[in-house]
Image (cartoon, rainbow, N blue to C red):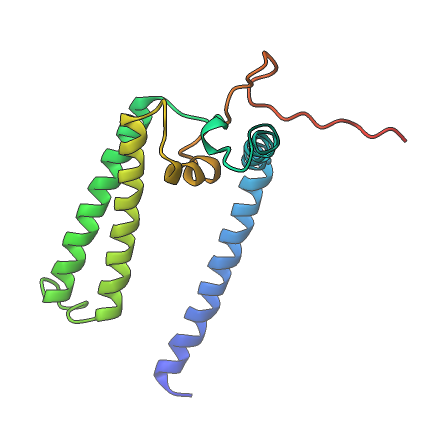
Length: 171
């Protein structure tokens, strides 16, 4: 066995152990947090179904979405815009040779630009929601329903705010 292989095998085993521990920690966190995200999606999708029945095939405007405070969207937009600018500038610097270890690696440059574009897209969505919280555009509705940008909408009929109660089955 060569000297390089003697180091490589324990490194791969250690990386596998770290991934296993990270997976176990993630499962513990998910179990402790519960299924609030699933309840939010159920509530919003149930309201979409009800609006479809009541208002016809284009119920997008009639479905209430869970909107957070403007300050939250401004903070998210500022942080994501900062991340985006930092990632794009840093990836450009790495690609053109500011650092020797990533100079000219095009796949790394493309991956970092994609990450910067993702942060930029979240920043634009959050800024749009901060400017127009009362009438969010249709393209932001999937983000509100499936990401932490949205919250559970309050119940329209004086019921519990945003909670989904399950009925017990008789039997």
